[in-house]
Image (cartoon, rainbow, N blue to C red; front, side):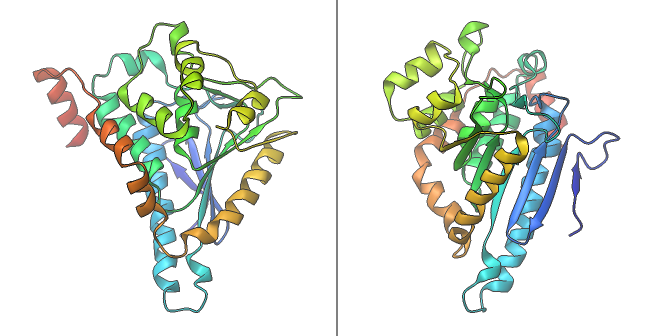
Length: 274
C-alpha cells in the first residue's frame, strides 16, 4: 500500500491524511480546515475509510506473521492527531448547523463511527494538539489513550460545551462518557456544567493520560512513543475482541440511540446508503 493516503479519495482538497512511518504505526491527521470540524463528509468519506485502510493493512501483516516466531509483524497501533501545521486545535467538534438538519447523522454516521473507533483492533492514541471541544472530546475518549499539550505556550481546553449553546446530548455521548469516566461528580462537571478543563485538570481527572510541553510535533512524538509501547498488545489479535466485551453495554446504548423517523427521513437514509 502506497502512503500517504488522502481522503476523501476523489477530493480536490483532501481533509484527512494517513501515513505509515513505521511498519507497526499508522498516523491519521485531521485537517478539515484549521479546526478539523467533524461533518458527515469528514466521518463517512474520510475517517471511516481511513480506519478501514489501516485495519486492512494491519490484518494483512497480522496474517503473514502468524507462523513467524515472536509475531513481530503482527504489532500495530494508530495515532489520531489534529492538523500538524498548527497548535491550536485537535478538533472543534461538529459542524453544528449541518448536523442539526440531518436526522440520520447520529444513527447512520456518528454512532457507527464511535463504535468502530471504540472497538478498533489495535491500540489507538489521541494526540490532542490543541483545543478539543464537544464531539472532538468524544473522538478522543473513544481512543484507548490520550496525550495532550500542557497548554503552557498556548491555551488548550478539553470540554463538552453543549450546555452553553442549548444542544442536548445524544445517548451515544452519555454512554461513552460513562464508559471512560467513572466519577459521577466529573459527569456533572463535564456534561451539566460544560467545564473547560485545562490539560492539567484533565490529567488529574484521569481522562487524559499524559500532558507534554511543546508544539504539535512534541505531542505527536509522545503519542507515537505510547503507540509503539502498546503496539505489541495487538499481536495476538484479541485487542478489539476484548474491548467489544469490555464496552458491550456502551455499544448497545450507542446502537440504541433513537431518532425521529418519517418517510422523508427514511428516504434520506436510503439515498445515502444506496
